[in-house]
Length: 312
Image 1: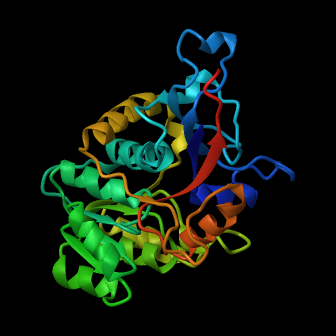
Image 2: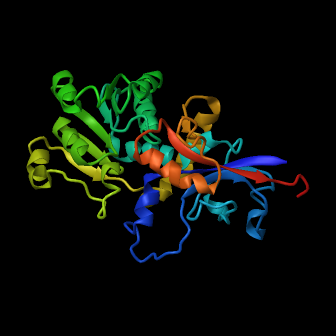
Image 3: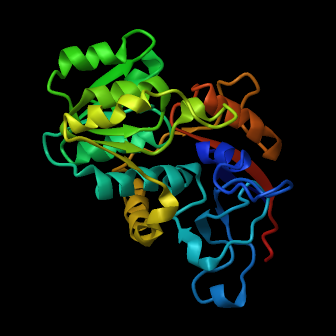
């Protein structure tokens, strides 16, 4: 019997591989952080919680593998081993927890989401709309703008056809209240300039700098204190590993929303890419390039076909 499991591609994969999270890690090492599949065997401690054949999603190091040993405590039961549930593990949880803990979302607030059509941006847009906020989203094509409109974004901005800073200055002269920022570099500067009085900028990544040796991209850091001070604005970093106490409850809620259709979980499996669908571990490198070239709409996932015996 043929079954397919899936692993997710994240910007964190490059950070970890480049030694930015833990410089002590040396090659060779296992990569990847998340997957969804079916349980094929159980340890003694897991037998009371799970059954063979059950679909689970998991966030654990070394996910880029055909089989993974996963602690029962980090696995989340899901209705089916489909890629939609994979989108929730890192991307969905990052948006959910960061906006809940740091965003201070309230009805009528203006929220800017950068890379809004990406794996985590899509969730930030939807969650902000559920909080009855006005949402602005940046993206790189008209097709992505159309996707953003379909999930409720009030003002998509294709930065290839409209200067983001100009649009924000003209259409939102009083500024935006919350920024969900994952691009870095010049986009970070534009976002800081666009903050309203008491505005909050949440840094969840800086993808524009991930391909440089240091991982840094140029920002006007010397002027940053004054720019924040004159608006009583703030910049907060968010790293999911520091909020694991909130993770289980967040995942339970996200899985319920996905299963009920309340949440759009867009998946990009690479079909339009030059090499076609991302299938097998050998296609992970293409999937990473696809993400860094900003060609993806939604979460980038890689399919791992498995031949599974029905006799377990």
